[in-house]
View 1 (tube, rainbow, N blue to C red):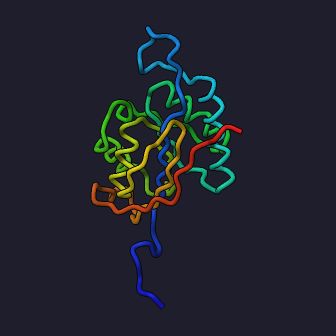
View 2: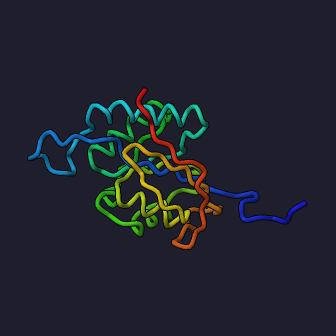
View 3: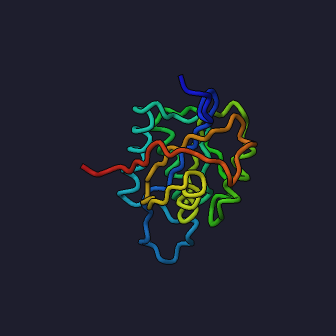
Length: 172
């Protein structure tokens, strides 16, 4: 049979989610405070349901402090059956891939599957950095990325992850 590959015996899974669709109705509202719109409120729980149905319930959920991301994370958590708390990070808002990696490298080892709810262009840039896949992540798009690491501390710009799936809720 074949030799040992980098995927044998160890891996972490990063669930990377762009927040659901937000509202632009109140033009005077600061960007950080924009809520989900009607479509966003419908799609966020659909992501959680998808995660539950596909055995992707995370061990931890991290979210940007922006209202639209936090509201997305809470709706996903509830619909997926996640029983922990959503951890909020200011550095996941208006940030860069280095900030995302810094946060992920500090995660506890027992967290094998982690959901991060953030914003573009950061989530698309992180997807490309970790998988060499360049794809548009519309609102509420979920990327499932397998990482050939046994410890989050090993995560770096050079980590060669594998995109397992890119999923976006579709209205019926």
